[in-house]
Structures are given as C-alpha cells and as structure tokens.
Image (cartoon, rainbow, N blue to C red; front, side):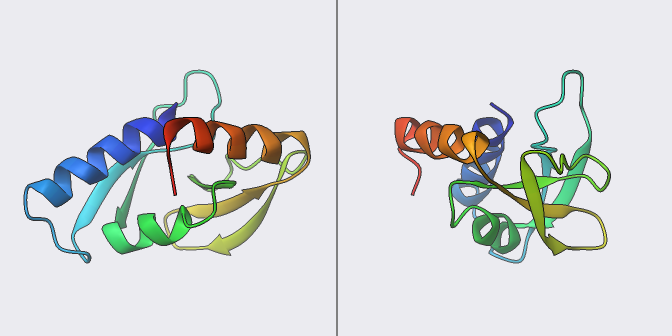
Length: 100
C-alpha cells in the first residue's frame, strides 16, 4: 500500500516538472502497522529501488530479516529485497498494479 502511495507522490512530482535529482518525501515501505516515517530520496533513487518489484525503501531499523535482506544502505534509508512468500506477494501486487 505504501509503495502505491509513493508512486503517486513520484508521479505528481514528475508531472509538476520535477527533475530526476529532485528530492521526494516518501513513506517508509516497511508495512508495519502505524509506521508513518518519511524518507527523503531523489526520483532517480526511488526509481532504481523499484526496478525490481520485490524491492522496497525502508527506514533503518525497519527491515525484517525473516522476509527480506538489505541490498543497499544509504545514509537515511535502506533498500530491501523480499524473499520467499513475501517476494511472491510483492511481485503479484506489482503485476496487479501494473508496475514495471
């Protein structure tokens, strides 16, 4: 759900003339109930994270080693890659939403 909201934020920024190096404020995509952490990254960084449907941007400390592994550590966020059943669910959601 958070990724869908973030994609809307990204799309609105691009439609408003945002450049690839413009900063986005997006929601942490950890999926934990009640998480309202926001993360700052560029449009390019956000796009690169989601080149794979099973990758998500999360706040440091919000990763869940039981269902994902960290693939990138940035100063203000992590990129995690889902595995197992969580990966299958993420990929199915991406196909349903029409994500690349």
